[in-house]
Length: 388
Image (cartoon, rainbow, N blue to C red):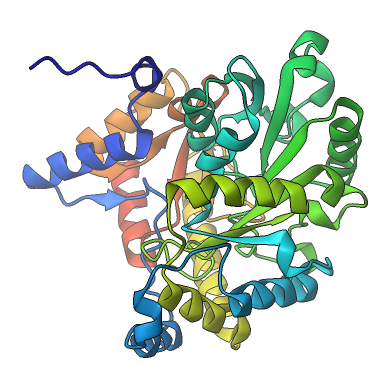
């Protein structure tokens, strides 16, 4: 039998992080002692208090049935309280929808608002799901370059008017993956004005909002800006904040009609997030955040060791203010892919090529701070021995 894939599926490039993992596994099978800075998957465990909560809630028979709807009322109330405390943004439970991880919500969102031929404004380099969701909905991605000279913020004024007129959604992601950039209030103000003027939905991906390194420079929420809730929504995730990537839990919040559209798509694609996980997530955001503060300290120490070590080896990079990524310029004379290959082949180090996340990422590679201090120091020692 001949199997024919759909045209939409044929358009998709190989999912970058799956390909990176395949290369890593292949090297391991050949005996390499891999040090991985590739996929942004925390190596730190989920907090014991969260696991203990899950152990309790999973035994409750009421949690063994379909978790239909937009989420437990208690979960959404916890989100509302957290958003108010963290960002001083007032929401109602009707403005929150539980997600099976923010990736799922971002991927599904297009299906509620994009018709074939509609344009989606996508930052690049960027998270691949913004683009794959566009393809699956029949939309057309327009890539907004994130350039160092612009602070890795998209230049809204550079988007052609004919593109803007066809655009229905604009994705932004701050703190940013992969560049680690943080958005300014000035940018968000301009974004709200842009969205209002051209009737474009803003989809703000804030998965890294709680991975920051200075209490005086906490990342902003898009929803903090006056008028933001009129034009957009924001996606949040427990994955990176609470080391819960495998748990698959998050939420989308903001404009009630946009949230309702995403919820309607989900009603037809899944049956909601496992209620036991929702209850464990409540524990995560309502309990003491001391555990999270300790995680940030670990990432900060790792960041400092890696960046200072790379700089001593004459790599051009700077200390990121947020996220757990380091965005580094490649050595002179090498492309992103060549650099990543050389690191893997000669030092058994896995990184992400910037070009794999968009053409504007060429000339950079991404290090995820998902290895211990000991392994980071060992990686720096290995890099020092490479003949560039």
